[in-house]
Image 1 (tube, helix red, strand yellow):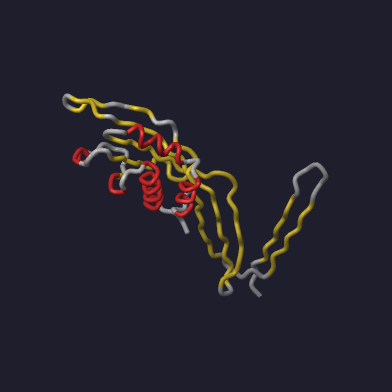
Image 2: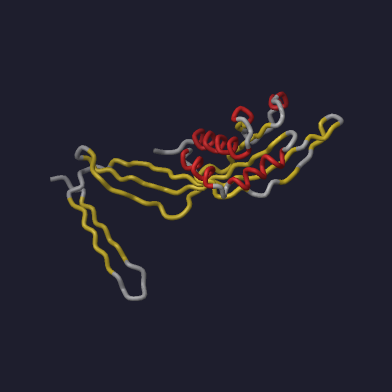
Length: 186
């Protein structure tokens, strides 16, 4: 199953809400451009913007199998995504600091797994106070890096008639594995 942009945003936002202890309704999804309507949200709230939704990481795996007489190849890839997070209002830094510390807690690793992601890192929060009219509003920013699996299936023409795997090893070198798949039709 391919992970969509919306699914990634939703999973990251749910993890952010739990880790920061903000209510889920206080985590909004950003577009990367300013939105004046956000000024009406009650503080504190967080805006999460997915900035790089799926750079490849590591080797892609491939599996070949047969479904109802048709050959299928499943591509399994590890992807790394980044999300910028801004928190507005009182305690902004503390909300992001809780997220940074949550990366190492088992309960939040388990939550991430349930959401289909793995949170790799939360950068140290930075305080960016902003002058609104005549008062400063506390704001903080950080970046969350997370991984997820992306699975895509391709139907092949023909049927897998035979798959032969051979392995060889030369002393002191990595083993070599060769797989030959015959998809010719009878």
